[in-house]
Structure formats: C-alpha cells, structure tokens
Amino acid sequence: QLQLVESGGGLVQPGGSLRLSCAASRGNLDTLTVGWFRQAPGKEREGVVCISKNDGSTLYADSVKGRFTISVDTANNIMYLQMNSLTSEDTAVYYCAADGRRRTYSADYYCNNGMDYWGKGTLVTVSS
Image (cartoon, rainbow, N blue to C red):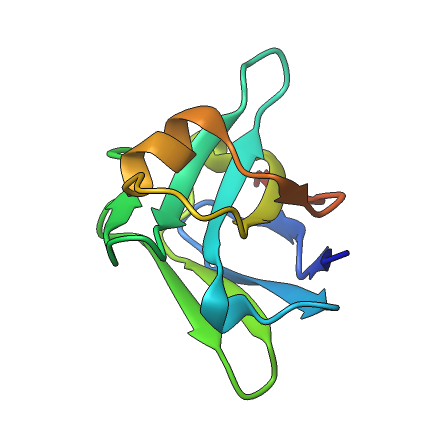
C-alpha cells in the first residue's frame, strides 16, 4: 500500500517562503493522481492543488494561484509544494495525497472530494 510522508513544515514570517516535501514509498507518483490539501484550525479541509493523471489537468485553489507551485521528482518519487509570499491565512496542516483508482475525473473533482491515500500532515505556521 502506498505510503506518503510529508516534511518541511515550520514557522515562517509573513512574506516568506517554504517548500514542503512528500516522499512516497510502495508506489510510483508518476502513475498517480496527486495533490496537496490543507486544513486550518476550525476550518474544513481545502484542496490546495491537484493534478489528475486521468486527463493531465491541474487545479490550484484561487487563494494560492501565483504563489504556490506543485512539482514531482519522478526519479526520487518525491512531490513538492513550493509556497511563496506566505500570509497568516496560509497557516494550516498540509497534507499530500494520491489516488490510484482508474477514473475519468479531472483535477477539480479530486480537490473537492479528496484522494484515497494520505500522509499524516505537516504544520505550517505563518506568523511574525
């Protein structure tokens, strides 16, 4: 069964940057739908960015467009989330996720409904 482990969270000042990593084992990220989600205190989980393997679509949440970038290092089976121009609104636990089920859904479906494999999360706190 696929295992996902996030790292790279921490405390960062407003306007700063952070890069989250998600190391995968027992599965190949290159063959999966992947994404990052977050959950802020007292709020529902939010899809930050998703890439659908079904149709190649990518969706970023409006709140992070132009600031966050997802990438996948297929050689090392690691997924990254580069986060720039951070604000206090970005404070949350961030989760990487993946889905290997054969479906026809685009990225928006996964960002709205989640995926079937999840990491345990890493906390990002944006504060001065």
